[in-house]
Image 1: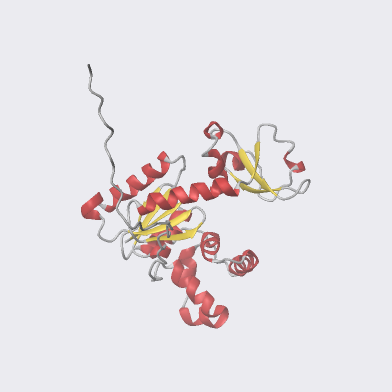
Image 2 (image 1 turned 90 degrees about the horizontal axis):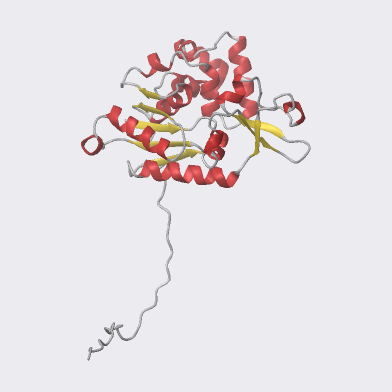
Length: 265
């Protein structure tokens, strides 16, 4: 079994981690050169108030209570490093999937940490103590765990063999956002699926494989397999960081001399 730790709105959470007083405020993260800054990330409070990704700084003027922050790569790097340390404190096999997303192999951990549900709860608690709020998902393969963590809030445990059933209600957007590195290509896939009336993973999973292959090629077959939660692969295990230290060999050993005690008269 595998677990995925996913931090929603990672750019925002990385900033709030250092400014906890912003937790209850609507926050927008902007990037770009003035005066062309655009919103690249929002928290839920900002979304509910009507702010949208891609809005320019000038378009944000009507939202007087909105907190605006420039994107901080250093704070994101710090938050992600803490996330990796958290995962490695549970499992020796950890994959650095992308900023704010970490996968770990849970094989053999139950005798040490208890049942899978407890491990997931402990992971969520540890991440919370670092000042981050995570979605945690556990599944029989890494990609199903990643898809569930991105698609479902809180904690999700998917029994082996029920991946397609549990993932079926998710929109295809979640699948494409999770496994497409090209935003323009993902947008074209979304348009194609929408034109065909495919809006949920269960619909994509139920299509016959031969027509999918003929119309969408191998990429379509791969997406269908992911939608079914049937993809299988090993983790791309994060290599331990090398620590370089300088040493000098002396010809004679160093003998520490105890300080001479003064006698009291």
